[in-house]
Length: 434
Image 1: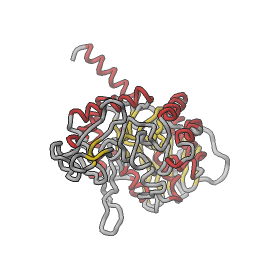
Image 2: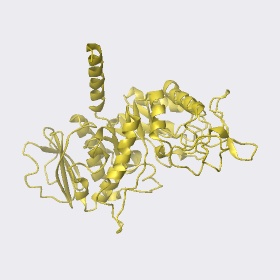
Image 3: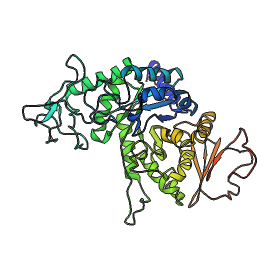
Image 4: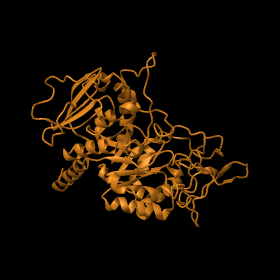
């Protein structure tokens, strides 16, 4: 290897190391009902930018920006038509993104490209004539752009789907060269014209990781996270299986294939953690002594979360135990990976102060996606771990920690069945709080 090549490699590694060493926190800035907000969600959220910044957020995830048949935005049609969004207008969205940017927060768009809703019927009487939302022909597609095995809509001339099917709308053929180019152009427009810095890829199981890589390579976002939902594997007794390696391997494989900044929501950690806090905290240590989710194998590319607009909110499809939500945040905000804070928990559940205190611990101690995790105890009602030799986190109802907490550590955040210590820092008020 020549000197120039070696120098270039060193530069790349240093840049990557700098990226991974940031104390990143993602904030989901909406829920399932946000589209109903009087005077528009974008306008409402702009009034809370300072509060979200105070929570320690470095990135904020915003809802799908385009025209959609469903008001929440997940059945998109005219992708360039941002004024038809139930969340507000294009100008209001641009103003919101600028307000976050002024606070040093990057905005992540919810990208729904697996499927698309058509405006018109073709000669067969099937809805598969798509309008892009501009005066020209960008994203104006026909049935050729539908996967051939999506027989409800296809004319049979497209490629077969590269991922899971989506019954409610036409599955777009992402192997079609025009589709790839025009969707890439649209994504780059969201960056250049609106100010978005990254993508949350909705229903990323619907197309292959190789396809996702095309869009990531073509648009070079600063942040990417994919929704690859897994509800875990269960034993015959209805309890989560002790080994969830197949599920977390799927997440790791996706991130490795896409490369670059690509990460995935750590559904494995969510499932394990919400089972564990109900008296089964032994689940939070795998057979190799590591964390049981994606963060145990590839923390730099894992985005951890307690709940989101699907699992929680009014959908409530896979909720974290409501009385133990702060134990969940104590875990994700002090552990490796990129933690994601949910809007509802900060503003609707009045947990802003507790969550912000934990986020401050993360920031103050430089906990980052690749931080070192040392699990000190994982038993039925007690989990204790040290992070980067600077922070210790305990969740669970057990109070007698014996000699697990060194004398030079001081409690700096605490609540119902959780406590966090720093090697150096401010003491909390005196009293029993462990």
